[in-house]
Length: 241
Image (cartoon, helix red, strand yellow):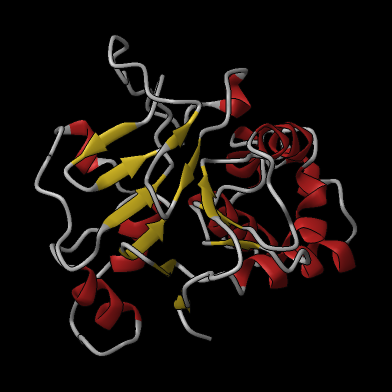
């Protein structure tokens, strides 16, 4: 299974990315309705963390079956798979919002684990303005081509690249504006912010919908955010698991 999935340019409609969902699919649908999302022509890309914490995590299989919805694997998908494989302690997964999956029977747990384990670590989307990359937390390498090669297994010796893609907060914690070369933009979530934070060409778009705030959608063709960024509001970030 490839750790990176590529999508060619969408000539029929628009492409959006959305921040962490965490089991709030009804709220996500409302955000899509607000931008007149058309499922027959538009596509939606998720930065991962589809599940845990929210009341509708069990709907993830329905959403992954939608032909216009595509997601990378976040750290919460990784935790869910590890829990089912008995590689994560029950109390740790419970603490991170996994009660919904813990309540399922063994066959159901296995079905969710298979679906979540098959998600790529990174997605790249061609747009009219250039290539856009999507990972859950960060691109830990200075160029997108290096990440592509690492995920494809072409750079032996690079350690913890997948884990960094899913867990790293170093860029936003240090306010690193260097960006990632070889790609127009990289879209990430993982670290909730009051509004989207743009560091170099890395767009942090988890605006805490699962914490009672709102979803941010970003048009991959224009890099315009919905709702729009308020220049008077700082993007203060909040560490979470």
